[in-house]
Amino acid sequence: MSFPKNFLWGGATAANQYEGGYLEGGKGINTSDTLTNGSHTTPRRVTWVIPETGETGSVPLTFGKTEFLPKGAIPTILDDEYYPSHVATDFYHHYKEDIALMGEMGFKTFRLSMNWARIFPNGDDENPNEEGLKFYDEVFDECAKYGIEPLVTLSHYETPLNLTIKYGGWKNRKCIDFFVKYAITVMKRYLGKVKYYLTFNEINIMCMMPYMAGGLTDFGDQAKAQGEHNQFVASARVVKEAHEISPELRIGQMLAYSPLYAYTCDPNDQIMVMEGMHQTLFYSDVQTGGYYPDYKLKEYERKGIVLEDTPEDYELIKNYSSDFLSFSCYGSNTVTTHQELIDNTGGNFFMGVKNPYLETNAWGWSTDPACLRLALNTLYDRYHKPLWIVENGIGWNDVKEENGSIHDTYRIDYLRKNIKSMDDAINLDGVDLMGYTMWGCIDLVSAGTGEMRKRYGFVYVDRDDEGNGTLARSKKDSFYWYKKVIASDGADLD
Ligand code: BGP
Image 1: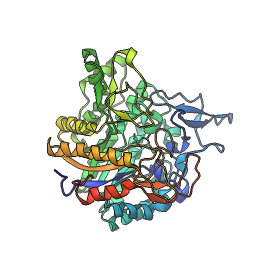
Image 2: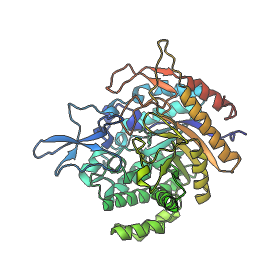
Image 3: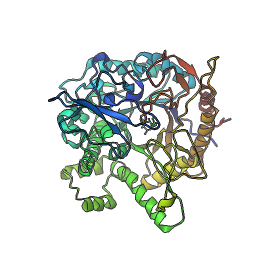
Image 4: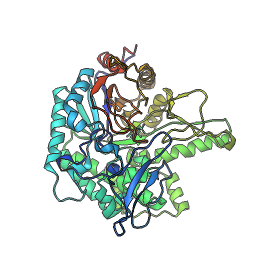
């Protein structure tokens, strides 16, 4: 068994974790630029100032439990704090070298996110920033040299900070127009260079990380639901515009997906799984399926959530659903109604019960190769649209030997099993899978913890958690292994 000849093998990154150059070339400030680093045990923080009094401080950004900013406070950058996104691993100055490394591995595709504030520094500017547009022209030209097809995320936890301060972020319908204008600008500019776009990274994370994913400082259920609705409408409008600009353009949804397992065979645990999966599938039902599912409408009714919407919103959602569905999947989560069995696995994003059949990495993320086959089947059965795995991988504190080598056998082992799982989904189950982009192909900053030590790459970058290091790149063992996998169309996994 092997993969289709046109299978898009590659790697994935995001501007706020990789690009750096945070004030260069006329770039504005993003919400992600106000996030400090954290660790496995200490959350990242949003720093703020109260303009009227000058008082400053920070609030922790904890998954599902972010605290409100004090009254009158706005997010800001403070002099005595460290913000990992500002330099990140400096793709801004290393893009030629990095894309050459991707070319050497034989990448067919490279997923990167475009930094919205590099194109529209304030989000609501009249005209785009030409220097920002030029930067991505050069990046895409470099990709073309190696026959690498870019896959561009328009917003990967990057919302211009001004949109948060002035409009309250995505809960404001004005953001729809700002985003669509930005999308049209780049889709036209890069026509012939970029075919594939994703609108919002992990659109379902808004409900758990509203500041990061939606630029919200109001974390109430109503604001989050409105923010999500506005992103759905914006996505549908981008699909419409894209199809009018060129039949070549393809717009995908991007969903964070993690299969849920019931810890016991207690029927109540199965109900818990069903309800838990609804919390993820709601987002693909709307954006890829084209409809608001009844289970969500009932939930809104119960919670008293009333959306600010128009009948045209639902027409757009129905008629311009995404062309394909992409998702991230790192492992599974296990849940139970039996409180006495609950043990926080300690991952930064996901909680649950420890699954005795699975191993976890140092951050508590389970490694579960079966999750890809399960995810692919669930999503394909539900929508029958092409799928694309745009994030999968394993975070590890890699050690660089004296002689410069990095022996990441655990990563090779993880990827081997995960690729086998995709192979099964394609060849045993008939799933239509377009491609696979391993997360963090060149080391970058962790989204969850802001750390550098949580590395995912085929390429090591010399940079530590405090921002020290030369930023020099070195190939890990997995670099050579992945090169062989791509060259053999996924047949040689040894
Ligand atoms: C996803 C995000 C990515 C990425 C990845 C790994 O949720 O889309 O941005 O970072 O998770 O998470 P982490 O960086 O916390 O290890």
